[in-house]
Image 1 (cartoon, helix red, strand yellow):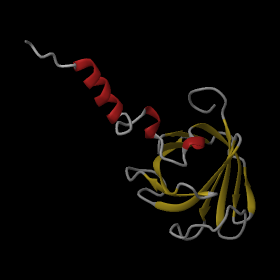
Image 2: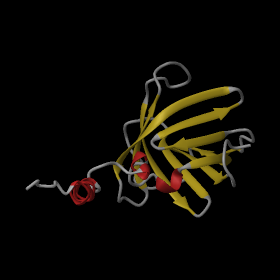
Image 3: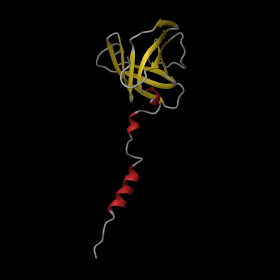
Image 4: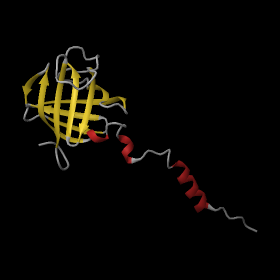
Length: 156
């Protein structure tokens, strides 16, 4: 008598056991950065407690943990490294790409906060290694306020 191997049930069992192990499509976005994904346009910039202005052409594009910042013909790319995914606001280290641009290879200890379609990024003004304790427009910080661009693609 011939023994038949139940391949289909075995395959189904193997797939169900590995389902939790294999990465899902959303795994490319680190925990804490889900709401930051997409295109943003800068609406306010405050340095050392004073409104610097609104860079009208400044855009930020975030995909996964990578970002691209563009303003006045200058492009800066980098990576967000989440320090505390459950923190409110979110603590991240912003690592600028080392190829070229202002602050090349620099790492800044920042805070991010998203509420609705508004993103605020607070970075230390003087020492990039000292993370601000809160997002406050005051002495020692640079605070960027961004508005989410509706639709897909780059900010316009």
